[in-house]
Length: 290
Image (cartoon, rainbow, N blue to C red; front, side, top):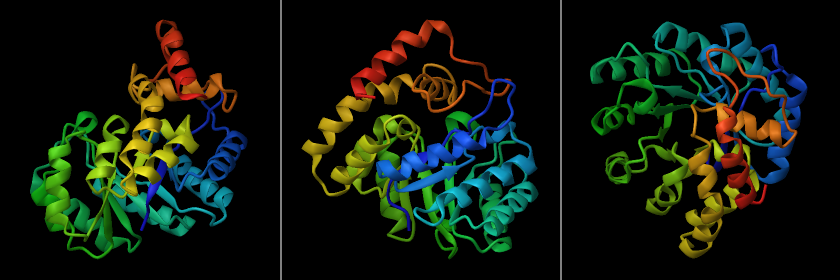
């Protein structure tokens, strides 16, 4: 259902941590102008962990309103409580989102059966299309391919964002999903190879900074043009790497503030980018041409 470069959008904030909806509207317009194929609102990069439930739903509503149907909106609605995830997913559906992105439950470390029952319950409770999200480096929970295979039989589970960076895992998932799920990279550094293997898109942090280049790279890779995709990706590789010198979204929010697109606000326990990394990130941005 969704393809190409899909930005894991930041949530702009003022210095006091309050939400900046004017900057959010401008970011949405910029991404549409630059060719971004979908907007992912309130995911990890959107600081979902520090927004309360009412803010979470309001940001989704605002993004849907700003987009006005021009590209799909995918709402981050995952939680480590199944009941909370259902509430957020229902809120996103009512706001008009096109799909929801649901991270594996974090901290409480469910079993594979628990993951299956969690996602089955959400899909059964809310009929909106849903994309699974596996990022064990942040959640301490790895959803294994066999569990994905079981979930692929549920009609409104339509995709998987796989962020392990393990290309062998990707090959296994492509084989077992058998076109029942679209597969999206959640790891910018390996996204080129992911797409060349047969993935349908990237839910990207780098796209916040270089949206046009990310979409061009995705398009070339999905068309099988390795040479063209590599030329673009080589420019982006320092960003893929250096946007994680500190925990996401610390570096990407600093970079966007440096570009004058958002204020420098971020919520505790995250803090602004350490001075140590400013030159590193500036060089990566210059290398990417932004």
